[in-house]
Amino acid sequence: MLSETGEWRGQSVFIKTLLTSDPDIRERFGHEGQIAAMLDHPLVVPLLARTPTQLLFPFIPGGTLRDLALCGPLSADETSAVAMGVLHAAAHLHSRGVTHQDLKPENVLLMRGPLRADSVRVIDFGMSHARTLPRDIHSGTRMGTPHFMAPEQFKGVRGDPRSDLYSVAVLMFDCLAGHPPYEDALGWLAGIHERRAALPGPPELHPVMLAALDRDPDGRPDSACEMLRQLWAARRQLGFSSGGPYETAVIEGMTVGEIA
Ligand SMILES: Nc1ncnc2c1ncn2[C@@H]1O[C@H](COP(=O)(O)OP(=O)(O)OP(=O)(O)O)[C@@H](O)[C@H]1O
Ligand SMILES: [Mg+2]
Image (cartoon, rainbow, N blue to C red; front, side, top):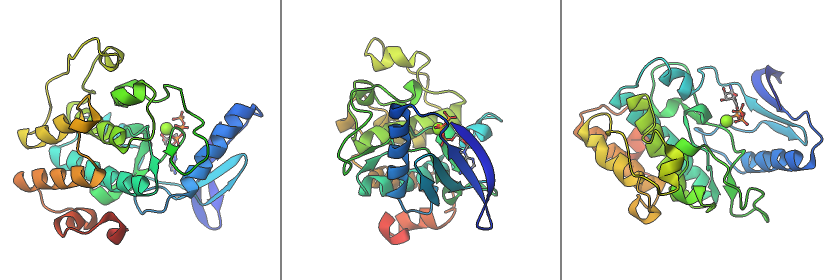
């Protein structure tokens, strides 16, 4: 795969080009494009155009959340605001029957400027699952990133939105601590140990992270909207100001569809 930036119809674009004729890889690329085309939300990078070998997205100038986290841990204010943005995007995906299955700081781009919920642009549907597509091309695989992958996903269960909530909790943990919760992620996923690092950040955020990190999906919030409400309540306890429309939407009880 070749990734490059360019100009298209007067705007800066990010172009993913497939360079192989391997039929499996071509099918996976087509699948990624099909899923990206099903989505339409301000915090999800929009697909501008696609061909069997190219996907075009707007170029997002602020780099990835990973780039930022490498400069040092994020504050509780920044982390919780970014997590709210990712959860708004996830709620949209889930409402379209899509689970991302690979939410992590490398797959969260940021707009330039102060870090708020609406800085977030979620990318990369290469591992995603769509309920409405006739075939799950990743079925039976353990694809994903071990540190960010929910235990049921490791066992091959795909399409459960609560797996994405687990990944958002790891993302929060990683941004606050500078490292993910389990040093030996594969051992934890396989059920061999429970050695999690101490929860980082202020105690007000701990119940939100703990619940979403539950090994059992039934122990997690039952939807992205529920986790958004929990995060918003924690931010209020911490005295953080509302940082834009995506935070105010939760306060006012608006649905993600209304704000989108
Ligand atoms: N629209 C965009 N604007 C700017 N940078 C982008 C954009 N999309 C992707 N990138 C950059 O390219 C990287 C890889 O993109 P993406 O996650 O979609 O592909 P991937 O299939 O995961 O590839 P890789 O295996 O290289 O991570 C991102 O982490 C980001 O740095
Ligand atoms: Mg990626």
